[in-house]
Length: 84
Image (cartoon, rainbow, N blue to C red; front, side, top):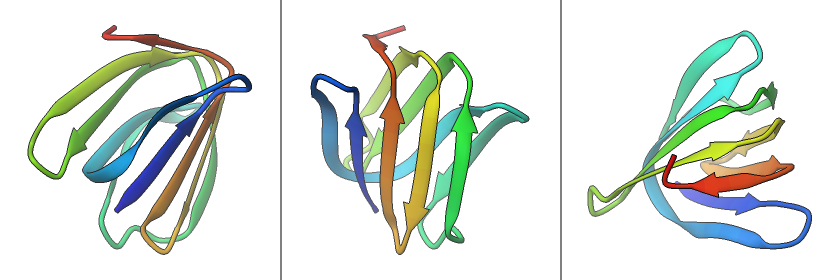
């Protein structure tokens, strides 16, 4: 899967990943390869990305949205604090 993590002023992360865990407004959920198409609102909280090589990235986000389509993920957030 490919992901782009974007704020209004910069690209935070782009790359190939194994999984993504996000804080949805109805509760946290995980996205894995082959996930159904999805658009979801996110609340502030912790995001966890596991890259293809197993490297784990964790950061805090302000509210935003996630879109999943054909193993391409766009994570659009108002702000990011890395290494939360």
